[in-house]
Length: 317
Image (tube, rainbow, N blue to C red):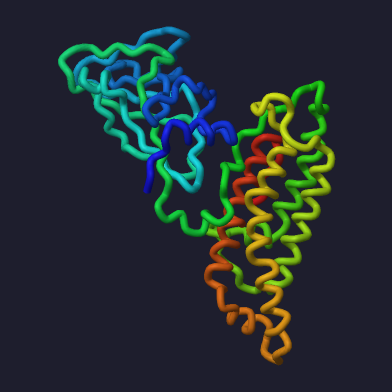
């Protein structure tokens, strides 16, 4: 397990959003400094209501009181990394203690909530957007099945492209076709109800590989409706960017690794009179093959949910 340097945080943030809104000046000493957000909840509040902080407004935490704090920014932790969190030393030395936990799960998206306690003898005063929290990124020493195919966080929130570059309706018009291609292919997202995407029962691997490759082709056709690459500023994103991430970072690595390898083996092995369902169990690298495929399906489910969220589609159960 290795911690990310400031340089790696900046390089990765240029490829995919780790923190939104992102400010390169907040990257200090191999950590990202997060600000105090718009909401807080004090246990000393008699009305048990959350405190809404306006721009520049202060929050007072009395001695001996707990408080729930929200970060100003949303974070996106890659699936091959883990986040470690703390409170800045200058504030901790005044008595503010983090009691809510010290890590952020791989794949987490959203604002962070800190449960804190004032263990000091004086009021602790914080201000909206003040840099209070620290977030470190750390590579998983054994990312396992994610490592071979998952390079960047592909389900980062999509932003509309420039109005001059591409019609805003284009992404909305093309989102149902790509969503349908993803959601209706077992080869892409696995079986409904299979929480971990590990159930390959009843599937012929060769036919499922055909379906997966067909999806790859269909996704490329849909991507023709969008310009190649990013539009002006890398922060301007659209559906084409998401499709490109899926093709480049998930599907292509998997197909390059396994499609030819399995088909060559299957072409020789399938000459046997043995049942194809029993025969495919004998593929020498079956365990690794299915582990990578399960990872692909799990990732594509995240893409499916991202599409449903961004384009107001109805998620399939």
